Amino acid sequence: MTDQLFLKMNDNFQIPVVGLGTWKSEPGEATYQAVLDSIEAGYRHIDTARAYGNEESVGSAVRDSGVNRGDVFVTTKLRWEDEGFESTIEACEKSLNRLNCDYIDLYLIHWPLREKRNHSWKAFIELRERGLCKSIGVSNFTIEHLAEIEAKFGILPAVNQVEFHPYYYQKELLDYCNSKNIIIEAYSPLAHAKRLDEPKLGAISEELGKTPAQVLIRWSIQRGMVVLPKSVNKSRIIENFSVFDFNISDSVMAKLDELDESFVTCWDPHNPPPYAPV
Ligand SMILES: NC(=O)c1ccc[n+]([C@@H]2O[C@H](COP(=O)([O-])OP(=O)(O)OC[C@H]3O[C@@H](n4cnc5c(N)ncnc54)[C@H](OP(=O)(O)O)[C@@H]3O)[C@@H](O)[C@H]2O)c1
Image 1 (cartoon, rainbow, N blue to C red):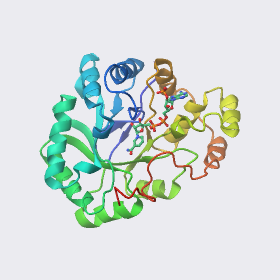
Image 2: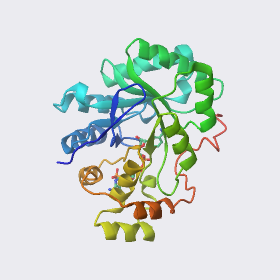
Image 3: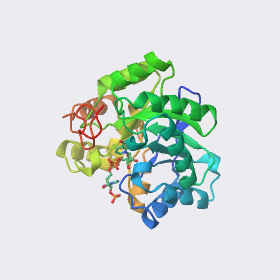
Image 4: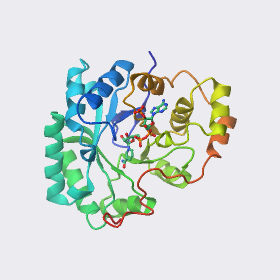
């Protein structure tokens, strides 16, 4: 068994650094089993979203896992279609019903929707005051969006969940978030499995005696982030959590930094889709 690590957020709650991603994990048996397998492997952090359609399966598995609810950190997200003040409050209550739990550890605005995101953030502050969520954060926010929240509310998100891996090393955003005590959560940390056979990563992985996925996850941890690898495959779930027994040297970390090619695998707030302007 490996030891989980935690980071302390700006609201003083702790967050486990490795969480199981569940985007594209089919609702029902696949997600349910993946969450059970992850908890058995030692994960204590599950990342879901209204948009993934699998909150029920996540909630059932957390309940059936035999681990106390208070020891499993559950994140879900407000989908962009539900942004706005009243609709955010309602969406949170519905997510709680689907998860079948009393509170969400971390609730995120999934997308910085223009004209709506500030109403949603106001609702998030109220949801936290009412105890429906312990921590509140955002996802896919740029530096400009974060600065806007700070100027308007003075209450910064605990985390900003964005795409992050060596092939998309958003250093400026990471430095900004570090300076504001906002934790970056690295999503698609395996570059959505699209670079796992890339030769330079392969050479580093051979040198370290670790798999390419483990090297990418460890890189995120050592850059100070929370990291959310997704898998529905038990052996990969275990592999992706076996990242606490080695260290990448500074010189190899620097080589990994150099893999950056602004490779974006998911949606990009710098190039938003027309139906969800930022
Ligand atoms: N906030 C947002 O807008 C946003 C956007 C994207 C993602 N996310 C979150 O971040 C999580 C992770 O991102 P992601 O799902 O895009 O991609 P990812 O974790 O970078 O990669 C997942 C892919 O890699 C495969 N895989 C996992 N472990 C592997 C291993 N050890 N070796 C080889 N292949 C492996 C998975 O397949 P198998 O399942 O078959 O193993 C899957 O195809 C999501 O699930 C979600 O929770 C959030």
